[in-house]
Image (spheres, rainbow, N blue to C red):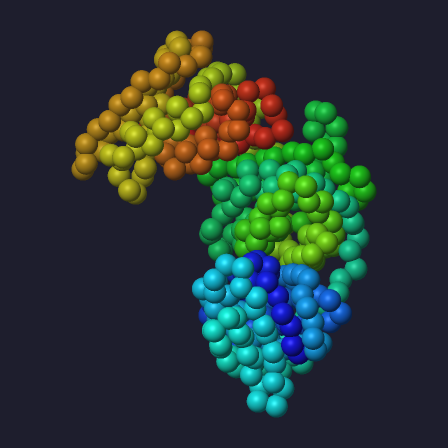
Length: 372
């Protein structure tokens, strides 16, 4: 194999591959990226046996072939090469080495046989549809903060993507929860997606997928089966196993009878929470919200470190209410608001609180209160 490729193009392809590779693994070949050159393109394939990413890019292929080399090592080399450099990769099958040259730089890397590289088996997908990158980006970006990190409840360690019926009709919905907070995000249902099985997409896949969704013009082909999901553009595809488990009935925890309405500038609210939380104890991170007519007082009282209080002008016309929350949860939810104002709907100091952006119900968040 012998190819020439521009450094920026190579870096983009290799960086996606090396981020999928697990740093610590007992199978040496899983630390490698499979490079396959043919025609006028080269593909870079990496896997951790749960996720597989394949990035195809144009290159000058002088001699077709395939080999595997350390993904992290190749990425580090390419990252440190000067911008605009032309990188030459050539494999010497006899010595089992890959030579990387650019200008006066020359690297000689150990390879492993391409035959040993595990390729994820092709799956028959029961549902295939397309969606614009910004639509999928919004669904996953706004939901992922609520993914649970508790390994015992493994079925909460991802985003539940499924079809549902909302007030305006059928939607593609993403839900994530860790038991303390919940995010439910809707988008209009894409054509041909109505028969899609609901799948729980693992956290690592959600993070890797984000790199595919940066291009606002990109159309993403989505394929779903009971066990796998694939997201693909013309040049890159990400295939992942889904979490084998049943996502709980999240509709039961979304409050419908909350009538006390608070409207507040989301950015100002987040800054105020952040300021008063400075003195809160690391363990509880508790912030108390005291609501009175058109007035919100945020306060923290931590016996070990001190106290803090800040008042905000808000729109609130209901009876007096005091309720406590984990400051981190409030900040994460407030940071999801794209518009100026956040609307909180309360019931009592012991009931879950609902948050949305203005009157938009396509993105709603639920957060459990805590005692303060």
